[in-house]
Length: 338
Image (cartoon, rainbow, N blue to C red):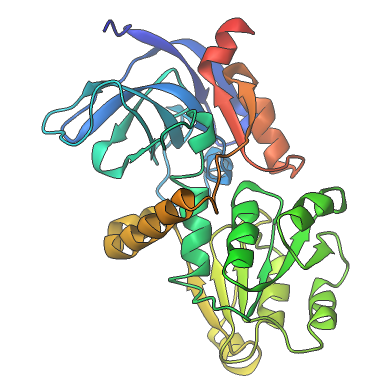
């Protein structure tokens, strides 16, 4: 199989956000090192991490200029030294946290790749490496969600949020979902019993109203900013858990004084990359559970909105403005015919 020397890719040139993301026609095709594979990218997932990296707020992220994108699915075309268990021609999905997924070819760690399920296209598997395990880890091993409990899910119409709503419903929880008003119907179809407006002037009061003042057992907090205070306020005292895995609305802070005197809750941080590195046994449990949910039909092939690679800067700007719904993907082949 002939591999070209150069490829089209999206390059981030500054820390000014997606507006300074540009398509370059002649980026060098990467060479896989030991334990790595090179894939011909069929589809790249668009995630909030991409925005955080473009603004320089992702801790330890790449420095510009860099090739952007952290999630890719495609056909394995080259095996690095020492790789076993992955075959040339198979389709896998994986994460490259330092960038490079928004391209025609990308290098992934072989040990971190998951096979694209039989019968699925590459774009349908997007989420298997980032948003799906994030939602599942936040709900179960970290959030300890049980049947009969109540969970508050922010950004419920997004890629991670939609999976979280579906899974929480499957596990027998009462779901309170937060989304912008034009996305309420989508979230209700996923099983949310209550859907609140993300633009509510007093979100905490709304949550306490629908729970009869009891609050919630678990909060999936991916927004931050002023929403973070509401999340802390509605979690049940002592037993309530708040799992934080995003900061789309900006940074927020809490002090030890707050935890002792105002918000006596269990606060848990989640970064899926650190989970993989520091607690691989937990990540293994998450992936095992996820594959079982796929096999049983609880989790079905994704239906992302697919855009051309060249449209990436606009797509990321729309995501940052919360003007999108569900999963988003970039397809290099689509760019060829656009």
